[in-house]
Image (cartoon, rainbow, N blue to C red; front, side):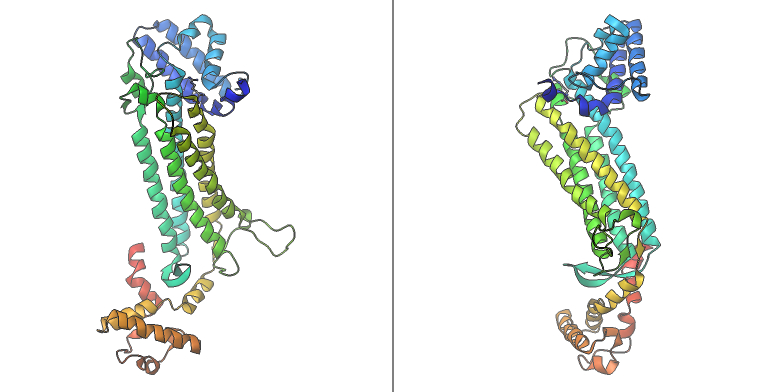
Amino acid sequence: MEEFNSSLSFDKRLYSEDIKGSIVHAAMLAKCSIISKSEADIIIEGLKSINKDIEEGQLLIQGDYEDIHSFVESNLITRIGEVGKKLHTARSRNDQVALDMKLYCKTKAKNIIEELEILISVLVKVGESNNVIMPGYTHLQRAQVVTFKHHMMAYCSMFGRDKKRIANAVEVMNESPLGCCALAGTTYSTDREFTSSELGFNKPVDNFLDGVSDRDFVIELSACFSIIMMHLSRLSEELILWSSKEFDFIIIGDEFTTGSSIMPQKKNPDAAELIRGKTGRVYGALIAILTAMKGLPLAYNKDMQEDKELFFNAMDTTSICIRVMGEMLNTIKVNKDKMYSAVKKGFLNATEAADYLASKGVPFRDAHGIIGAIVIYCEENKKAIEELKLEELIRFSGMFENDIYEFVSYNNTLDKGIKKLLK
Ligand code: ARG
């Protein structure tokens, strides 16, 4: 049962949040005259020395303790004696664990936002230094011309939304559960406003039962992480495709690829594949935590301990994937000639050619048909639209004039569309 029940091996990472919460709780007890000022001072000193010893490796978090909360409290009592037993007045491990998790989530959410900011700056830099023409796709079929920079900026928009989603999740969770105690508050006259503001929350939670049984914030952050992973996975998939010989659009730096143990020519995009693959475990954490919570009566149930390993793993995974993606992107070389020749072979100015006819009064649906016939003609004659002579074009429609060439030039197309946006 001890082995089965204990969460110490994974909740030990909450030690500094646990100690921080206890220090503020002890100060509140003294402020409300529930314990004396000198008792609080001894408790606070003891907690600080435990924190210091853990940080310096003098005190290892191990042993037969049920969780980090019992570990810290037992160590406190060993250090300062009887007075240490007063710390847990007007508190339960139920509000304590909810508090620790919220404090931890708030710090880590900030870190992930910073990591996303670094990734965004890499995307901008890589896009800016490769502001070259490339084919844009729908259905993975060459569609219209875009630039590599515009493609990178699409991901900046996604990661920008991810940042907002996390900041919003933090704003929603930013209420202190400390003081809810086991489920019904306490007969002591405590000061929840004080502990809430000392710990950096907007306010104490409104409802005690909710305060100790809410894990929405863990779920919401896991959902944010899942969306980030989905974006990273799509980008990984593109990097994998683009670095294949079939595309040959980019080369990923050797640091982020591996060779094959049997095929000497291979350069495998392992880092991108791992990011794509690890997306599964982050989605898994979200679904597992949602499922663990769905049937729980109010208030605290031990099932809720199951959130930790899953959430910590999802968070660590998301964090390392964001960092690896940024560092890998920094090493990519863009093969501008390959991209340009894919554009030329792809009739990526066919839509613009149809727009040209439409601007001359041909109904768009008819213009679409005319250009379709021209594309077939080009394929048969191994030519691009812009390589056809005016006499050839006129055979398909009398509306073609010399200005068509300017209209279908790729640089002009981009100047009219995407480049405006990128300025
Ligand atoms: N380890 C527990 C958890 O992670 C802490 C709360 C324990 N509370 C209790 N009443 N047993 O949820």
